[in-house]
Structures are given as C-alpha cells and as structure tokens.
Image (cartoon, rainbow, N blue to C red; front, side, top):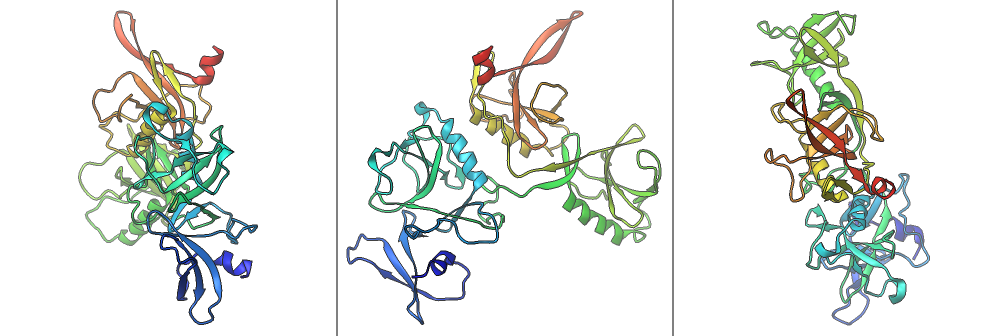
Length: 403
C-alpha cells in the first residue's frame, strides 16, 4: 500500500466506488480494509466509531498530516471537521473547568496511549455546541490533554474502549448547513466600517453600490441618492441613507447612517449624520481568531470565570447591531486595557446571560473584534448631592496575585 495513495484518501467527493472488507471474523470488530472495485487495490483502513460513522486509520510511522497546498487548519474525525480555532476554544474551556460542575476532564482510558501516561480527556462538543460542563458521560470526540492540561491530540471513541486519532488536515472554511447559529464554525475575517457599535460589512456595501447604480435615475420620486461635496470628503459623491441592518433606505423614518459613494458608484465609506454634519465611521477588520484575555476576574465579592466572561462576550457580539433602543452593548470610554479602542461593555451574570433586565453591577469589556479585554464593576457615588454612576476595573488573577 503506497503512502501517497492512502494519505490522499478522504473518502469524500471522489468518483470511485470502494469496497470494505472486515479484517476479523469477530462480530464486534469494527475495522475495515477499503479497496477499489475494479483493481482491488487497497487504499486504506477505516474504523467504526460510536456514532456509526467511520474514521480513517493513520499509517503507523507515517504522517498524520494530509498532503495539501493549504496549511493544516484543523482535525478531521470521520465526517466531522474541527478547526484549530474551535479546538483552541475547547481547550480554554477544559483548562478553566470547575471539578464540582463537571466530571471532565477525566482520566484517559483505552489502548491508544500507555496506562501510566496520566492523560486526560475532554469532550469537544455536545450536540452542535462546544461542551462546557456536565456530570453525564458524553462523546465521541475528545481532546487529549497531559497532566498540566496542555494539548496532546484529538481522538474519536470507537467500540470496546478503542480510541482513534483524528487526522490533521486542511479544509476550506465554509459553514456547515447544520451550523445555523454559528456556534462552532469560525467565519473568515471581514472588513467594513464601524459606526459606534454598528458594523457595516464591505461585501454588503458592494452589493448596495450595485443596487444604487442600477436604480439611479429610475425612481423619479426618490430623493436619493443625493449629490454631496462637503466635509469630511471634499469631493463630489453620492449619499444614500442606510438602515442599521445594512440595507439601503427606501421609505419611512431615516436613521443616522449614510452610505457614501463616488460618482461612478464605487464605495467610499459610511458616515453618521449628526446635527447636520457627516462624521466618518472607522475602517475596521474583524478577524476570525479571538485573542481573549483568558483570566478569571474578581469584581468586589463576585468571582467570574473566563468561561462566564466568554458567554457574556459572545452574547454582546450577537447584539452589536441590535436596535439603538437596547442599551447594551454600551460604548465605554476608558483606558488601561491591553487592546485598541473602542471598547464596549455588556452585563455579565453568575447564572445565564443578560436578557434586557436585571442588569446588575458587573460588566465584561470587549473590543470591536468581540475579544475580552477586561471586566468592570459599577460604582455609585454622590457628586454635589447628585447620584453618579461610574466604573472601576475588576482584578484579574494576575493583578490579584501581585496587588
């Protein structure tokens, strides 16, 4: 069996018919030899896992990495592909887990690694979401960690305590149909314009530019687009109001956002109309990978784990383009965080996530990339007889240890 032939097989989208031959007559054996129907050439070995899917076995002494022009960006476990970013998030959850709330990470058992390795197992997902905690056994996809909870490998559970290593490989970053909420898929980076807490994606703006160009001059009654040549652009350009969801304004009350285009309908940018003046929005790129501050935080007498802050940050990110009537996420003008401004705050709770009531005094602080940069505690003071509300920085584990 040639290495190149075996390693190139992913058993997907290839116009070949393969046959599988059981290796052993033992009925509980779940290993199969795979070969072509025409030439009977052996192309690999597969093994059945607990979900009745099959994973490809890795040639002993061979490379775990699938040959590709692309850099490996994840692990393939049967039909399930886990990106590196998903695995990084899962690793953070494993490292910050609380023993009282979860039976994981648990000691590794099986035949893949030595019994005295001291390795631990952490489930990657529960259903279609990252596994956070639980007292019930779950699987079949796991991170393998060492005693210090450092990453070792990715495996899938087979039958009879047999674990199989997943294949280090690369796949294009396309969201699976089943991942409608984007809970596991990490989308590619996107560029656009940030107006306060509202983000306008370049791709949406380009589509709007095509629509504006096709409609120009056709709608006699429409006031838009309008010609403009004043500050801050000082060049002839078109202006068309934008809705908060990025769509072009057609009728009804106009919001504050304005789409700015060149005379040939190329995109210039987005601005906010404030008291008769245009204020240009900031050019931003939101990256796929999140560089969170991974610390726990002590906010007065309340302790918040990193994962509690992550849940609040994720909720804040989802609500960034919500109606302006929603006060959170809220813009925060402060300093002392190891990140580029602007910053936003969102309520963080001990149990669950904020649902527009019972705000509480504690906030997670995020940047425009939805990355955790810190935490705050609300401070109420009296100034000149009037109650005022401010914030003080909460202490992370490092600050607390050396304060």
